[in-house]
Picture 1 (cartoon, rainbow, N blue to C red):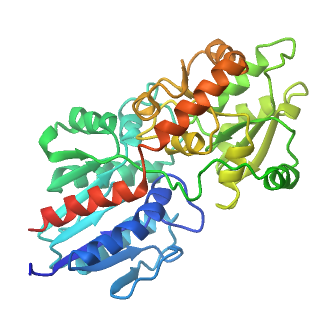
Picture 2: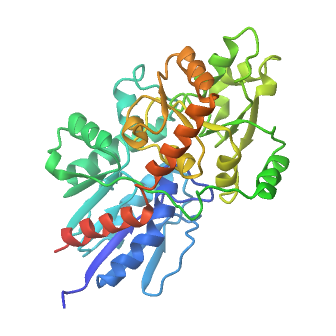
Picture 3: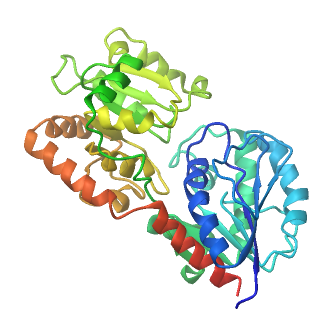
Length: 388
């Protein structure tokens, strides 16, 4: 029997509400931890004080930083003290956060999942990679991501696009980066044909019979502005201009005053419905009830909502940018994210029965290629092989 490996996993990005890295960890860990246990690993998972991980495994040690997930400055400072202490003598220290502490980390081997480097690109070229990150977040990400990339023995990227980005920007050998794609939770995101449930969700959120769905914060990078501009450019309402349900974080909406001003215009305000965050149980139903999903994001390390929509049988209109073509394949209508006319043409096209049914069928087949079980299996292989 091989000796027991000590694996320490840093997953402080999980919080009371999750998107991006938090969603990644929430989906991955319940599947990864049992696989590591079966391989005779001793596991410690490090979380934030307000993290909620829906799993409790005998034999897995959970430690918590004495700080809330969103307290960036405090978390950065506490990482320097606690991670070296808790990662001491680990065979493999795994960061799911794209970061490592600046202080020396006395683990034998270090592995970091780098989801994307948009914030780093933004710091260097803000006009080419727009976003309204806070100064504190930019400073923290710049320091800790560089530390992670340079000091890790191996880097996991979530797409081939991100792998090339990391390689190009940091001049890291491609042999040091392994692309392990994200998955889809097929138990949650699936075709829903229960009309009572579909009608219930529409009543709960006061939705029309047909609507488009947008999932993501109101931010520059996510590019909700493209949909607003497309609708504002038409002087006469078209049949394909369905209301858009905007689901996502609204805590930083004050940074995007121009979008809010547009949304309040008399001719547009009835066409955009802002829900803020929704419970995890509601999101798959909102996908299923939607006529189509619109994802005009300018930059993604992966683009998980594209696959989640496809798994629900809902056609996708998405940006032809960054990792999205790699994830969507030929199962989505891809548009120019800088051209409102491109979006309008796609909306009109998706309303033809032939294109709608073709996209629905292709999307379902595309989503089957991805699962969190597969992702967790690949991650377990990489982690345990690194610890040998």
